[in-house]
Image (cartoon, rainbow, N blue to C red; front, top):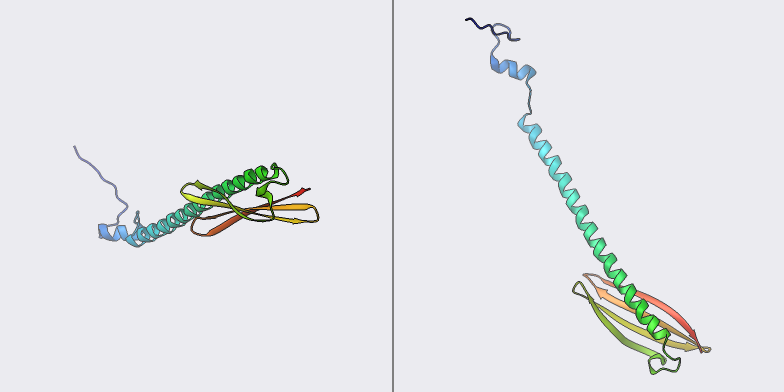
Length: 140
């Protein structure tokens, strides 16, 4: 039995020259460029992920600090107006921990024209200093 093979190669043309003229596949340079583009894209995505995690933890601490300030401010608002805790002064108050970060509360009471102003501030440091301040007023 005889086998017949057809080829697009012309007589006298070598296999290597056929590959060079209409070759399929990728050169080493193309593969390296593609790998570099992929690496840059992956590094950009990793950077975005880190930024997202950082902002998410900041939002968590901001929420916890606001909750603490609001809770303590409500407590102070409901004290009798002549309570020792509502004298005109500055007080270090409550401390709480959230994910290993210390939230420190303090408040200041000022009095003017039969009006007490209570300003409650929560400080925390998660690598940077932050604070949340809430203020309320009480009439005598």
